[in-house]
Image (cartoon, rainbow, N blue to C red; front, side, top):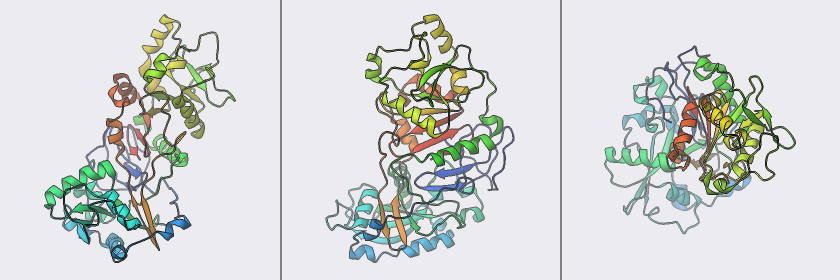
Amino acid sequence: MSCSKETTKPGPPSPSPSGSSTVHLHIDGSSSGAIEYTQERKHIFQDKDDIVVKRKRLKSGDHGSTICGECKRIDFNGVLDLTADIRTLWREPENGILVANLAARCTGPPTNGCSLCSLFFAARIPSDSAEYELRALSFMGFITCVNFSKCSWDFRARDIPQLCVVPTGIRPKMLAYHIIDHVAAHGSILPTKLEDTMNSNSIFYPRLVSGHVDFTVVKEWTEYCKLHHGRLCATEKALPSGMRLIDCFRPRPAIVPAVGRRRYAALSYVWGQTMQERRETVPPSTNDLPRVLPQTLMDAIQVCKAMDIPFLWVDRYCIHHLDPREAQEQLDQMDTIYESSDITIIALGPDAESGLPGISTIRETQPSVGLHDFHLFSTKPHPHLAIRNSTWSQRGWTFQEAVLSRRRLVFTEHQVYFECCAMNCQ
């Protein structure tokens, strides 16, 4: 799963004809933006004007953050003012602007109880350096999957600053490489005013992400795909004969025949040892599922309900494994099964009991600090790293399931990641 590297000038979103796409970026937990270009079957993005997500206000307790004297002297309003003249950040894109000399405050875990010192320490680029600096850099300039430097100045003027805690004395070229790697793996710090930033000129806006999945956002991603991507993300294939699905909306989910063009999700996951040892399978003569289901399957059913998708396909229970001939017929049509699904739910966990983060378990939340009229918080790691490092990505059949699917919804420990044939959203 990758991002396209081609861009042209931005434009307003519009329905996409066959073979072209409107590109929009929406980063759940870090940013949102818009880029428009025409490209066949590429991974692209979502606009804040099309996906409107209300920013979370700070909890009252966040205003009581303990801040040390040195951190109180940092001019964060000056950083936010850079949004009005973002050219300043692009004059030295690899080095950025020095905001504060943090000296030795980030060489070890802070003991002064300062919330900002703790945030800086968590966000720092690890080094043997005795001193650190806080630098403001272009957010747009470090999105490596898109070459924003080729965009017009009018477009780049809609950038926002990001803050990075970097070792003192690193040469700009080397610093840029460190920042790219670190931001992808750990994120950076984004400052934002507390008032709603949706009306600003910026195409990016920071947003806090809760421990549970916000399906209002996810459904907006999928609906945008259906409305604007045309045949890029459509299929005309009929469902395989003899196909069965799990009816998610019954009081007790059960297996039913796939009649007509039923809307369903498919589950892509790793069985793991516990699933391999399970002997239960659904015989052809019954529609009942086992009374005890793996956690990942139970979570996938909840995802279908939240997204108003009536049915779910899971290989373990929707294929007649007791009938070798019929099972082989279904396996031979796996391409059609995944391509015809409305979306494929991807579980990165090592086994079927791992569940989906944000459904049955709480996702990791980003470090954040509230200060009077603005807020600082860390962005989340890039989901591609979680995908690459997962057990799921090491299995040939799961990779095949992702490639065959028109839309994919990946659950990582930090966020959900949506990808179709024309865009991706985090």
